[in-house]
Image 1 (cartoon, rainbow, N blue to C red):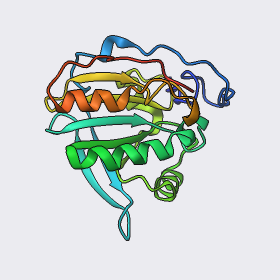
Image 2 (image 1 turned 90 degrees about the horizontal axis):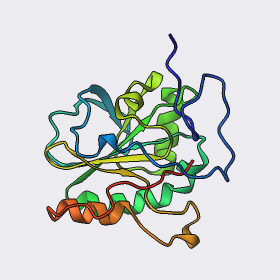
Image 3 (image 1 turned 135 degrees about the vertical axis):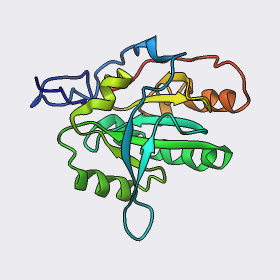
Image 4 (image 1 turned 30 degrees about the vertical axis):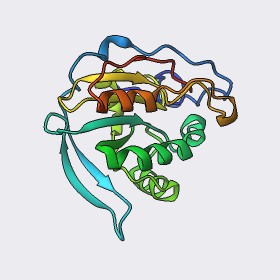
Amino acid sequence: MKIAPLLCGVIACIGSVALAADNPPIAPDTKGVGEHVPPFTAAMTTVNGAAPKTVPFDSQKTKRVTAYIFVGSTCPATNAYVDRFKELEHTYAAKGVDFIYLYPNGSDTHDVQLKFHKEKGFAGPLIDDHGAHLAQLFKAKRTTEIFVADKKGVVVFHGAVDDSREPRAITKRYLAPALDEVLAGKPITTPTSDVFA
């Protein structure tokens, strides 16, 4: 049985194309909030040095607040949020938040991932989720979709950065307030939000 890749839209069969840019958001699966991050190990690669560096990653051993972000190099939503991701990294990495980008789309070869990640200037490392195995563990349906885990590895947020792919149309932010609250040890006011394709 083939594992379906994660596209900008809902998980679809191999060979499907990304959905149109005006595709409406969907409500995320809320089952993950309040549960521990799925146990997995993977090779994690950083590209912000002279050469890519790969180290092992174990989801059960991290002791920091962690944002797991499912992205795709050709996904309009991912590309629309690049600057906002970098701004969030700049603001929150120094406060103790790790940003990990997972690439589940079959069209994103490892070389494509490395090139895209470096060109876009992401500071956080990437994980090549070939076959979308980790996307299935997380129950992720779209790129770009985010899961935030607290220091104990419990998912406290699942959703999007904000309520608009267009920066000028943002009326509500989700990820930044969630990070502020988890870092302060407070309950998350908005633990889930719709996810844009």
